[in-house]
Length: 431
Image 1 (cartoon, rainbow, N blue to C red):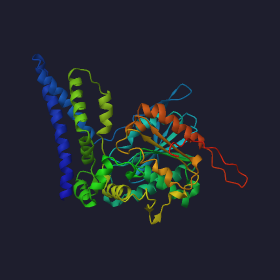
Image 2: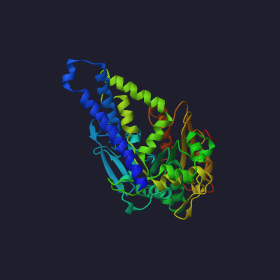
Image 3: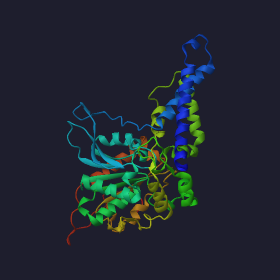
Image 4: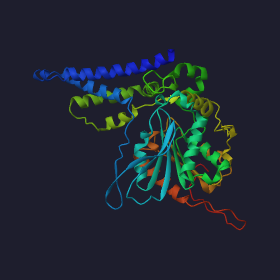
């Protein structure tokens, strides 16, 4: 009951602030006050509008907002979001474009389960839709999943990816962004050994903690300092009475959002104070840069307690992926079993979450993969977000990823005694 009370306390705090914002907006916008212009009332109106919107967004799953797409025929085609595989903790969805010829590349985009919805990759999806059939993992909010559905930890996450890859077939190119990179590598190795016909053609890992100790950051330092007992006591709560997942142990999205904001509290405070002034001066709009960013950033979801705790313990503390000691459903996964799937890593020079060195460690784990199947890239000046969204992704990284996919689209031919060694098709900066 204590954990449920804590969960509902956070929700009560959020709800109260949303109500305060709405009340301030309603009071200060009273028409009679227009006869007596007062900067204080104008500021209160702006503060109420920004506050109400901000706290309201925290419990709303953002819409994908991808409704039409202009195809080479010059026509706008509708984009249908279709569920290909439906599971209790997450779905595999496809952005289908009726009337367009099937794109030459089939891409599975593995979204993070790290507090935000898969819509965080909206701009990434839009950029890939141009010449790819795009599929993405759409993880569910743990508070909406009944306890009767059971647990969901890093092994379950990996097996979900295995099922999704099997469903899509061997002509798939997988792109994993941030948190799922180590588990996606493990899922690929799992298939390589147990179901090689279902392996994808290529695997691109973007800013993921394959080896967290390769380049320590504030995130990895925290994981090393805190004990599992401390994390369980301070970070885990049970879903309150108003949700379908009542009683489920979770790492609440609101608690994680508090941690996110505290890491850069001064910058966020400045952003909100400036937005209040823009609203006050009539310079803000419903879809301006501030609202586009924070409508997504503030929309958070709960993670199951077992997924959060097993990620910290097994990926960060024990470094099971980095040591090639990861076990899934009783089977020890060996990254050395990857022999035909091309692997590329992408890192940002100024990434303060998964610093350069953490992700490229994946290439050293693939001991049986020939060098021509390995590639790496470090994007100069890019931070964590910039390596999968924004100008760095659009102008530099995306073209490299597309070239990598094209270079590894054909099935790997079987080796013969007379076969000549191939020249490396991909530049491997880590070699």
